[in-house]
Length: 147
Image 1: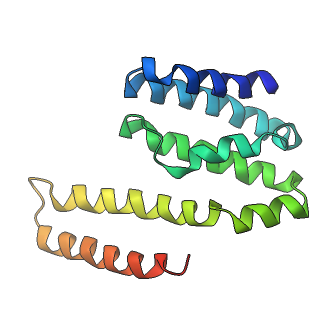
Image 2: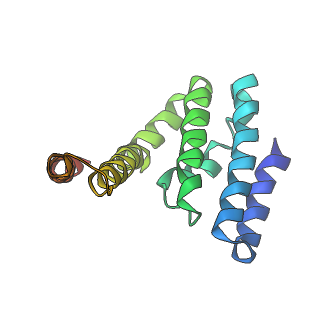
Protein backbone atom coordinates (compact mmCIF):
# COMPACT_ATOMS: atom_id res chain seq x y z
CA UNK A 1 0.00 0.00 0.00
CA UNK A 2 2.85 2.35 0.81
CA UNK A 3 4.14 2.06 -2.75
CA UNK A 4 0.77 3.22 -4.15
CA UNK A 5 0.74 6.18 -1.78
CA UNK A 6 4.28 6.90 -2.92
CA UNK A 7 2.89 7.07 -6.47
CA UNK A 8 0.71 9.98 -5.33
CA UNK A 9 3.78 11.73 -3.94
CA UNK A 10 5.69 11.14 -7.19
CA UNK A 11 2.69 12.39 -9.14
CA UNK A 12 2.65 15.63 -7.15
CA UNK A 13 6.39 16.11 -7.69
CA UNK A 14 6.04 15.62 -11.47
CA UNK A 15 2.68 17.36 -11.93
CA UNK A 16 4.21 20.52 -13.41
CA UNK A 17 5.68 18.50 -16.28
CA UNK A 18 2.26 17.12 -17.30
CA UNK A 19 -0.60 18.64 -19.22
CA UNK A 20 -3.86 18.92 -17.26
CA UNK A 21 -5.20 15.98 -19.26
CA UNK A 22 -2.16 13.80 -18.54
CA UNK A 23 -2.27 14.79 -14.86
CA UNK A 24 -5.94 13.86 -14.64
CA UNK A 25 -5.41 10.48 -16.28
CA UNK A 26 -2.46 9.66 -14.04
CA UNK A 27 -4.27 10.70 -10.87
CA UNK A 28 -7.39 8.73 -11.80
CA UNK A 29 -5.21 5.68 -12.46
CA UNK A 30 -3.59 5.79 -9.04
CA UNK A 31 -6.83 6.54 -7.21
CA UNK A 32 -8.75 3.80 -9.04
CA UNK A 33 -6.06 1.31 -8.03
CA UNK A 34 -6.29 2.49 -4.42
CA UNK A 35 -10.05 2.13 -4.71
CA UNK A 36 -9.68 -1.53 -5.68
CA UNK A 37 -7.42 -2.19 -2.69
CA UNK A 38 -9.79 -0.35 -0.35
CA UNK A 39 -12.66 -2.46 -1.64
CA UNK A 40 -10.68 -5.68 -1.14
CA UNK A 41 -9.49 -4.80 2.36
CA UNK A 42 -10.57 -1.50 3.93
CA UNK A 43 -8.03 -1.65 6.79
CA UNK A 44 -5.21 -1.48 4.21
CA UNK A 45 -5.91 2.20 3.65
CA UNK A 46 -6.71 3.12 7.23
CA UNK A 47 -3.29 4.68 7.81
CA UNK A 48 -3.31 6.50 4.48
CA UNK A 49 -6.76 8.05 4.12
CA UNK A 50 -5.41 11.47 5.16
CA UNK A 51 -3.21 11.47 2.08
CA UNK A 52 -6.12 11.20 -0.32
CA UNK A 53 -8.42 13.68 1.47
CA UNK A 54 -6.56 16.45 -0.33
CA UNK A 55 -8.09 15.27 -3.64
CA UNK A 56 -11.63 15.65 -2.33
CA UNK A 57 -11.51 19.40 -2.94
CA UNK A 58 -12.64 19.00 -6.57
CA UNK A 59 -9.97 21.50 -7.50
CA UNK A 60 -7.15 19.22 -8.55
CA UNK A 61 -5.74 21.34 -11.39
CA UNK A 62 -6.58 18.71 -13.95
CA UNK A 63 -8.73 18.71 -17.04
CA UNK A 64 -12.36 19.06 -15.94
CA UNK A 65 -13.29 15.76 -17.57
CA UNK A 66 -11.20 13.94 -14.92
CA UNK A 67 -12.38 15.86 -11.88
CA UNK A 68 -15.57 13.86 -11.30
CA UNK A 69 -13.66 10.57 -11.59
CA UNK A 70 -11.11 11.76 -9.03
CA UNK A 71 -13.75 12.90 -6.55
CA UNK A 72 -15.80 9.76 -7.10
CA UNK A 73 -12.85 7.48 -6.31
CA UNK A 74 -11.90 9.48 -3.22
CA UNK A 75 -15.49 9.41 -1.93
CA UNK A 76 -15.72 5.68 -2.58
CA UNK A 77 -12.39 5.02 -0.83
CA UNK A 78 -13.45 7.07 2.19
CA UNK A 79 -16.81 5.31 2.32
CA UNK A 80 -15.13 1.93 2.21
CA UNK A 81 -12.36 2.79 4.70
CA UNK A 82 -14.82 4.39 7.12
CA UNK A 83 -15.70 0.98 8.57
CA UNK A 84 -12.14 0.64 9.88
CA UNK A 85 -11.77 4.14 11.35
CA UNK A 86 -11.76 4.66 15.09
CA UNK A 87 -13.56 7.35 17.08
CA UNK A 88 -10.66 9.81 16.98
CA UNK A 89 -10.42 9.52 13.19
CA UNK A 90 -14.14 10.12 12.79
CA UNK A 91 -14.09 13.11 15.14
CA UNK A 92 -11.16 14.64 13.27
CA UNK A 93 -12.89 14.12 9.92
CA UNK A 94 -16.09 15.66 11.25
CA UNK A 95 -14.28 18.76 12.49
CA UNK A 96 -12.22 19.19 9.33
CA UNK A 97 -13.05 20.22 5.80
CA UNK A 98 -14.55 16.90 4.66
CA UNK A 99 -18.24 17.75 5.27
CA UNK A 100 -17.87 21.13 3.53
CA UNK A 101 -15.89 19.59 0.66
CA UNK A 102 -18.57 16.98 0.02
CA UNK A 103 -21.28 19.65 -0.06
CA UNK A 104 -19.13 21.81 -2.36
CA UNK A 105 -18.60 18.89 -4.75
CA UNK A 106 -22.35 18.47 -5.14
CA UNK A 107 -22.87 22.18 -5.73
CA UNK A 108 -20.02 22.50 -8.18
CA UNK A 109 -21.11 19.66 -10.45
CA UNK A 110 -24.81 20.45 -10.15
CA UNK A 111 -24.24 24.08 -11.13
CA UNK A 112 -22.02 23.05 -14.03
CA UNK A 113 -24.71 20.65 -15.27
CA UNK A 114 -27.50 23.22 -14.99
CA UNK A 115 -25.40 25.92 -16.66
CA UNK A 116 -24.52 23.68 -19.59
CA UNK A 117 -28.13 22.67 -20.06
CA UNK A 118 -29.35 26.26 -19.81
CA UNK A 119 -26.82 27.54 -22.34
CA UNK A 120 -27.15 24.68 -24.82
CA UNK A 121 -27.80 26.11 -28.30
CA UNK A 122 -30.88 23.92 -28.79
CA UNK A 123 -32.33 24.33 -25.30
CA UNK A 124 -36.05 24.79 -25.80
CA UNK A 125 -36.93 25.86 -22.28
CA UNK A 126 -33.70 27.70 -21.55
CA UNK A 127 -35.38 30.41 -19.48
CA UNK A 128 -36.75 27.80 -17.10
CA UNK A 129 -33.38 26.04 -16.89
CA UNK A 130 -31.60 29.33 -16.31
CA UNK A 131 -34.03 30.22 -13.52
CA UNK A 132 -33.49 26.80 -11.97
CA UNK A 133 -29.74 27.39 -12.07
CA UNK A 134 -30.12 30.80 -10.41
CA UNK A 135 -32.48 29.37 -7.77
CA UNK A 136 -30.03 26.57 -7.06
CA UNK A 137 -27.14 29.01 -6.66
CA UNK A 138 -29.18 31.16 -4.30
CA UNK A 139 -30.25 28.23 -2.15
CA UNK A 140 -26.75 26.71 -2.16
CA UNK A 141 -25.19 29.96 -0.96
CA UNK A 142 -27.69 30.00 1.91
CA UNK A 143 -26.96 26.33 2.68
CA UNK A 144 -23.22 26.91 2.56
CA UNK A 145 -23.44 29.38 5.44
CA UNK A 146 -24.39 26.45 7.66
CA UNK A 147 -21.03 24.82 7.02
